[in-house]
Structures are given as C-alpha cells and as structure tokens.
Image (cartoon, rainbow, N blue to C red; front, side, top):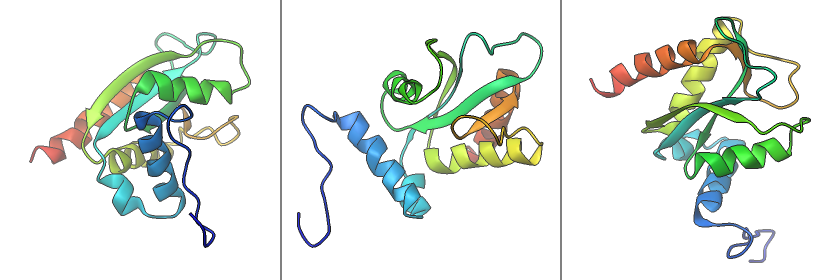
Amino acid sequence: MGGGFFRLPTGEYLNEDELQDAELEEAVAEGDTAEADTFDGTVYAFSFPALVKTGAPFPIKVGKATGDVDKRVEVQRKGSATFENPVILGRWQVKRVGAVESAIHKVLQSRGKWRENAPGTEWFDTTIEEIQSIVTFIGSFEQA
C-alpha cells in the first residue's frame, strides 16, 4: 500500500474468518480494544488430552475467535510444543467477544489461576465448570 502500510494477503493465504481474526488481533495489539470489543464471536476453551483431569483444575486455554473456532484452535496448536490434537472443551457465542474474553481472563487471574510460565498465553489452571460459571455470570449483565 505504500507509506509504511501493508495489507494482509488474502485469497489462498487467508480466508475471511482468518482475516477477521487477524484484524481483531491487530486491533488488540495496537491497543484498540474498543474496536475489538465490538465484534460478535466465540469464546472458547481447549486443552490437550494428556492435561485433562476429571474433578480437578488442569491447564485450559481460553481464547476468542470471530470466525471458525476449530480453525483458530488448529492455528494455535501448530505453535504449541505438543504432538497431540487439542480437545475443544467449550464454545460460547457472545457479543463484544474481546470484552467477554478479557473479563474471563481477569476473573481467573484474580483467583490465582493464570499459568504464568505456560508455553503460550491465556492458559489457566481451572475447570470447564468454572469457565462456564463466569460466562453465565457475564451473560446475565448483557441481557439486563
């Protein structure tokens, strides 16, 4: 585009969902959370089979997608240090996906659940039930 501005490749490199996610990530990286918060999308939780526990907290990644969750998780899996395929534990359609994801992260951080030394970001020692309860709580304010 010139003048130090560049356009993300489209067509065979990025589909529309990936482009939306890339734009959302770029907006957040640049500190424009107001733009990111306006997107409707999906908050999701995933982990890897070797980490999943029953009845106890285990490492869970909580993220957001404005497009296809399965594709988004697959992109993140490629950057992980595991050969396992991830297991998507939950998906929640929300308005203002950036704000909802951030609220979930903040609640879990305030409860001391954030995995500071995880290989990646947005990992928490939690349960799917705890995440579900936070999403339900946040959703009660959106409907009010």
